[in-house]
Length: 450
Image (cartoon, rainbow, N blue to C red; front, side, top):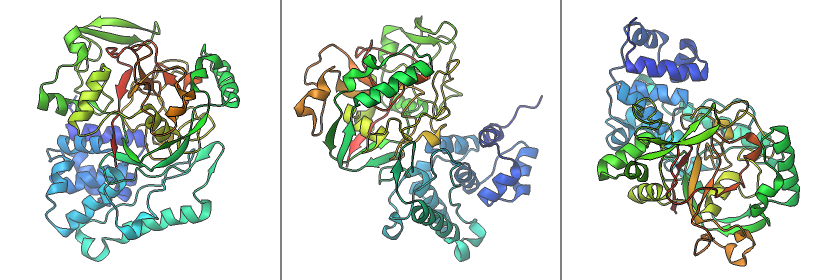
């Protein structure tokens, strides 16, 4: 059996996820069908980075996924390409990419009409594609205008409404690459008695073994005001953490201790496994080579904090994470107020496998942050306080209790081993995590100030 070229293998994988054939990819990418077929036929890769970026745009790949595709084709990563565009056509191509994925500033005349992807529960609109290099001079803006027209049409027809059961997902807006902008202002934090009754129903429906009393630390529901901030669109990946560790020679808690907790999906329990750490998630012999764009796991709170500081960011506060996940109107789930079974990685009849970041775009929050429920639980900055939501000092830019009630930092979001009945945007997780807890169910994302 012929071994596939890494580029062909990776491209086939992404086409399979989208359930696309060559015809669909050729139309979406503005690359001739014969050209795409030739790469597959000769088991090779494009000789130019422009073709790779066009494919990534067509497939809606994340920054990390695009870098992986570029690397497989022997091309430089995006951050280098963005610094050195050679022609006007290249600039237009990269500008199209940065506006859809890297969230760099858009022209002022376009900002009000860009970014609506789709109504939750429907297939998202395909992103506007940049014109080919050959016709860039004459038609370089055609697809951009088409994309803006589609977005404007959605705004006119549907309005930027928010109604029970669904919401319109904005693009990940802002001027920080890979981060979503969350504007300053109030939001509804916590849960009501009515919400807790709803959680009871979900616990029973999914036989999750939970009950509403588990969530009383989310009460009372109050209006909390935050300054504006940015939050990572995705959980920090193995690829990103490798860059950090390589640059700093950082040694994680699990590496120093010599073991970490690994989830056993058959026994449905976690066990301490010697040799398990972020480099070897399953224990000795395991690697991250094939999961570079999956969330980094086996990281303690301190590991997460050190990474964010190295990246000139910080861990989000618990309140920031909650606003980023549910919007200003207190949605029960990032996508709305009705549970959707295929919007995240979690336990249904069996444990979901860990998913590549960005695998569930329909589960995005109102600000465009993805994977906020399921996949991995996420560290936030705050110490846990069971009654903290009742503290009147917690209503303006809350930072959590000044001193720990118990040595536990809050985690948010739940993960692939969490049953559906538990998962909602207001869920506060503090057990049994101390600051040194590490597990293959636990990761993080970063935030930053405006």
